[in-house]
Figure (cartoon, rainbow, N blue to C red):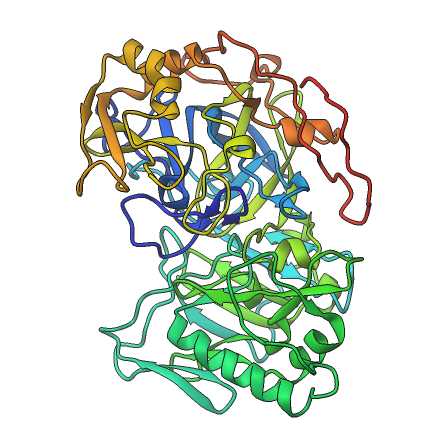
Length: 554
């Protein structure tokens, strides 16, 4: 999953394989390594740790696509940035109230049971297997975008011509290489790279990553082909236009040139042998930024090889965690065929082209209902994670306001000045030092801001590897339950969903209103200080020129 505000989502401890796909809970010292229990606290880290949430593990009744069962819910209580990317970026509204991970997995390490929502629906008897089909229409077919998600195995069977791609059956959907032979990455008839099974980097198919990301050596071949098309088939439309593909949301191309190149661009293909080809249509190279802008940007961008939304766009794709494959079933065809179990579990997907294909956004949403009586939430559909996360109604954002401080991150998105995360060795705070923008830790505003928190936790300072600047610095040695209480002494800069609340679209989980909510009597700690008035200019309608400028307290 890739949020603009959250940027490339990845665990601190991982190579940056993908964005939202590496979103997962980590345990602190007081938690069992085999299972995270109700009432325990967890932490989530994104963007190489630059964005984070801490929350409380609970459970409640969940209705997803008319499949109903009790499921684990991560109740987010504090964090640094909204969980949903802004669309349009960066002036737009946050896209979600939370996230629903569609991969099979657990909060923390798995014990005897998987704790993801689909697994809970299977355990509760609402579905017979961890299978779902994602259907996304393309912008040319329907400018409103979206599509449908079909839960459970279908009795219709897979259509003729379906291509099954072997993936890992647990965790993220890692594409498996052949036991013998090579994986050939091609663009049309051009070989971009050949991987042996030993060299294969196990990319994932991730609905939470916008577009298609690939190493620069592969992207160079794409750029070369795009320039060749611009100079020949699209010479009239692309005259005097420099075709370079960056991970930059401000880079735009005129419609006539972008559409012409999309029409002529060959498909990007990972050939796994034995007629197993994972294909990304060349027509997804450029996307319209908003339905009314007439401006286009590139959805193929540099990064680790990740088959994001561009690999799903305009297709029916079944994810089968039971048998370990992803089935590419052909064109979406308006999502008219109901592939849900018994034809009873279809849910609508939403997201216009710019929201879905943008490398900095990559968000597909659906509605989910949690609690008794049911409360509705707009959540991201993310095949790159496994947890259901919702904002608690007490959730606050902490740190120096990134809108005001504008501390650059690795990909120039917003970030606050510190993060909290957990490993199996314990929890820690991480400070981001950058002497070109701020004095280095501990002689900076961020340290001064968090000093009351450090005093509450009685933390000791440890210098990060490589010196004070520009490396990161760490403070460690505390349980997340104590952190969750101690952070309430700080001044929050915003409530967690203030951006959507400003546009009248926010939903917080009012857990006290649910008669079926369970958390082993643990409850979130409320902040001791109210956030300031929310004054950000927000575009609530992507096709509106109106910017809301009035100061509104939320």
